[in-house]
Image (tube, rainbow, N blue to C red; front, side):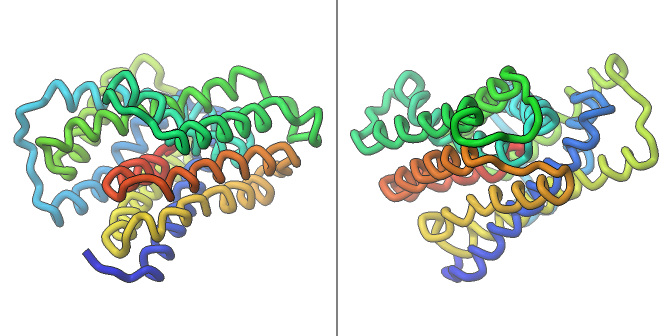
Length: 303
């Protein structure tokens, strides 16, 4: 474990850039290809990067909790599919903002699943965060026009992805009690690739040459983002560099504006400040061990 704050912050901000880029490419291919097809190639082409990470920490596939890995991969696959659907129909900045609700759902899910008792500060943060969600989803008419007409169900999918992403975090916590992180990552990559490969013949749409290049880039960017994120959290304490995970909103807004002519409205900025503010508040009051799990999930969704 190093203690290089500048290096950790730079790498984490760079990881969010690659995540924003892969979401933009998923948005492009999502208009013509099936969601399962996109997710398959994302997992396939990111596999070499996952292997690199696993080899550095000791590649171990032996497990006594194969069923847990299967459930983790199923939920993770649902989360990826929901992300592709959300970025295809929502402006990139709005999808990115709503992805930051994962820590809020993590608190809510920790009550029935982990039997935890959230503090008053966390409940206040949850309330503020969901006010931000309401502002983003419904505030366009009141606070300023957004980009085009976005179906209401797309916001529901983006919000649902936050909840599913939080559930994956809970599963990682449970598996981490007995499994190495590299074992969890490898089984996830293998099982997701196999599952989508089985479904691929039923949803296959012939990609164009441009689509193929985009799909390769999606997988590569996903793998690069994971490597950068891993290096970032190995460079400095999560509590110190955690706020830089929110750089993803800057990248998403810029890419959406320059690449898709998406101009964020006032509602997105106001709601985004509320959601991010609640996340930073929780980060301040979280224990270091829990912070790492939450922020790793935030950066990889759409991760």
